[in-house]
Image (cartoon, rainbow, N blue to C red):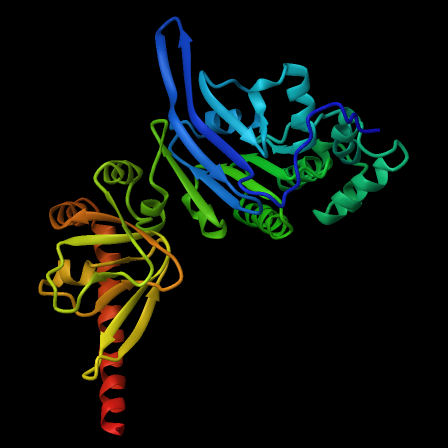
Length: 383
C-alpha cells in the first residue's frame, strides 16, 4: 500500500541521521522583525536520546518546527538521511513527515471523537501503511506496549492526562518512524507520569529510535544521552553544558564566546608534572590520561578522563604547579576547550554553585592522588 514514488528515509546504518545547516528563522509582523534562530548548526545521530532545553522564548520549539517540516527556515537546510526536507513540495513533505517522523505534542492533540485505538490507527490510514485489516492489530500492540490495552475503546476524555500522553506516544509510533519528536511531552504531567514517559523514550532509544525532546525542565536531561542548550536563538557549546551543568544558560552562552579550541595528537603531552598551569581545560572529543612518573620513568596512569570531563581546576583553585602529567590517550586525537585563569576566576565568582561543585571534585581528586602516591611507593619498596 506504500507509495514508492514518495521520498523514503534511507537505511539507518549510515550517520549522521539529521543535519541542520546554518538555520536562520526570522518572523515578520507589524512590530517589525524578530530572529528566533541565528545560524543553527546541529547534527543528530541514530539512536540518540536528545533533550533540547532553553528558557521560554529561547527558540527551542521553533527549532523543533524546522526539524519536522512544520515551518520553513528563512535560510539554511535541514537534511534527514540525505533528504533535503525543504526541497520537497508541501504535499510530498507532509507524506514524508508522516512516514519518517512520529510527533508527540505537548497537549496530546488526540481527536476527541475517536477512541484511543482509532487515534493510534489514524497515521497508518493517512500514509497508507499496513493493510486495512492489519491496522487494528498493530495499533493494539502499540497500546499494549504503553500499558493502555484495556483502555483501547475509551475516548481520550475518559482516561487520565498521563494515559492520554502515552496514547499520543503510541500514535507517534504507529508508522514505525525512525525519529520521534516530542515538544514538552511531560509539561502537563505529574512526576510519576513524567517518569513513565521518559522510561518509554529510553526504551525506544535503546531499540534504535532517535528521540528529540524539547523540555523546559533541566532535570529531564539526567535520563537523556545528550543535551542541547539553546539561548536567544543560539546553541550553547555542548561540552560546556555537559561539563558545567550548574551554570545558568546566560553564563553558558557567555562562556561559549570565551573558550579557545586546542587539538592534540594521540599520546601528545598536554601538561607536564610540576609545570605552571594557566588554563582550565574541558574535553570536547577524545580521552586524556592522568599520569604519575616513577623514578625509573615508568608511567603510572592514575585515571582517564573523557568527553565532558575537565582538568586544571586543582592548580587554578589551590595555586601551585601541575600535580601530575596529562597526555592525550594513545588511540585517538583530543580536542579541548580552554579558558584563561582570569576567565576561570570570573566564572567561579559568577556561579557559586559551580564553584562549590568543582571544589568537591578537587577534594576527591587530591585524595585519589594521595592513594596513587601510596601505591607507587609500595611498588618501589617491593622492588
